[in-house]
Structures are given as structure tokens and as C-alpha cells.
Length: 293
Image 1 (cartoon, rainbow, N blue to C red):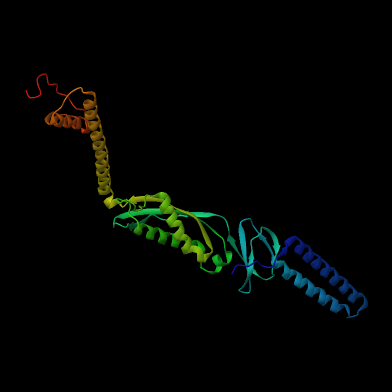
Image 2 (cartoon, one colour; image 1 turned 180 degrees about the vertical axis):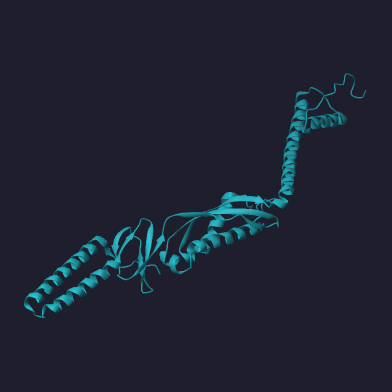
């Protein structure tokens, strides 16, 4: 569980340590001169105590540490986790402890281009970019061996799972495809957040950066897409043409310009649809005689 480690201001601790070092050395030198002048062995005890204080001060120097902005130091004392320091600055923590640096900066990486079958069984190439950061230094340091490698592996697994649950193109209404950028990104971010929560990772965003059919079927799928677009365009053209023909017949009838029987109406509808639905310019034929000659 993440907890704050014991710490005090590093500059105050450094000043105290320097005073102890200088003072113990001065006391030891004075005691040694006293022994040399008087021959008394009493100051020897003072020298020993001064040496002990000097040793303690030197050991205390190992507790000084610097924490950079957006960084945490995970503190361990002989293998035991005693807390983390995330406030930037110069600090004094438990001496003889080890400090492991964990960056809290926002990081991002792009997965490799993965080849996987989509929900319809078509092989596709897919890649994604993941933006994340560490929010729990304890879990990032001890829950997994390497949190960076863990995030990369889980990202690839999440992208593969996403690709197998959605088709490249959704031909049915209400079905989400891999090309629905916002919805797919939301699903990928949510799934990846669940996978990396145990490592103390917050996934800020995950978004598809590359999506294409595999080379072996790309040409066939391109033809299929073009055919679908042609059919959709023709359907719109026919719908518009039928509406225009209806408007023309209604206008002629309302203004009384000409009376058309069923056969003439059928001929007119056929001619108008031919002109409106043709994929190239039509050449009109002017009939100078009667309709039946």
C-alpha cells in the first residue's frame, strides 16, 4: 500500500551533519593533543566518542536524496518498504536505505502493427498509441517486474481483443466497426485501464493509429468497398430521379399543359428515368411526327 516515507528538509539535515562532523573532528583533535601534553588516558574516551559521532554523521549522509519534479522515490530499508517520497526537492530520509526512482510523467508509446482477424474473420493490420502515467509508485515498483514492459504487453493484448470483437466495416445498422474512432478509442481506453490498474497505472488515452486490411486481401476488399459505394450512389440517384419524375408529372397535371394517358405517361417516365439515371450525357431524339408514327 502506498504511504509517505519519513523525511525532513535536506538542507537542515545537511547542516546538522556538517556540524557533527566538524565538531567531532575538532573534539577528537583537541583530546589527542591533551593526551600528548598530559599523558593522561582520560581524553581517550572522548576521542572514541568523537569517532563514534563522526561515524554516525557519515552514515547519516546516506539518507540525503534529491527528488526531481514529477518523480517519486520508493524507499526501502534492508528490503522492507517504508514509504515513498514524491515531493520535489532535497530531502533526508532513513539512512542506509535504498531509493528507487519512479517517473510520474505522462508517457506514450505506439504498439507494433499487429496482424489479427476481425470479428468477420478478415485479416487486418492494426496499431494503437497509448498515453499513460504512474499514479501509485508502490504498485509500479512491486506489483510487476517492469511496469513499462507490462503496459506494452497489455496494450498489445487489448488491441488484439478489440480487433477480434469488432468488424473492420459495419454493414449492419447499430454495429460498431473498428473505423468508429471515438467509440473504439473509448472501449480500448476502458479495457486497458482495467488491465493496468494493478500496476498503479492510469491510462489517459488509447487510440487507433493504423488500421488496414492485410495485404493478401486488401485488393479484394478495395473492390468490395468500391462496389458498395457504387450501389449506394446508384440508390441515391434512383431515389432522386423517381422524386423528380413525380414532381414533373404532378406539375403537368396541375397546370393542365398536356393530358397524358397511361401509355404516354409510361413513355415519359421511361424517358425521364433514362436521362436522370444515365451515367453519361444522353443524346435526345426529337420526334417531329405523332407519338405513334
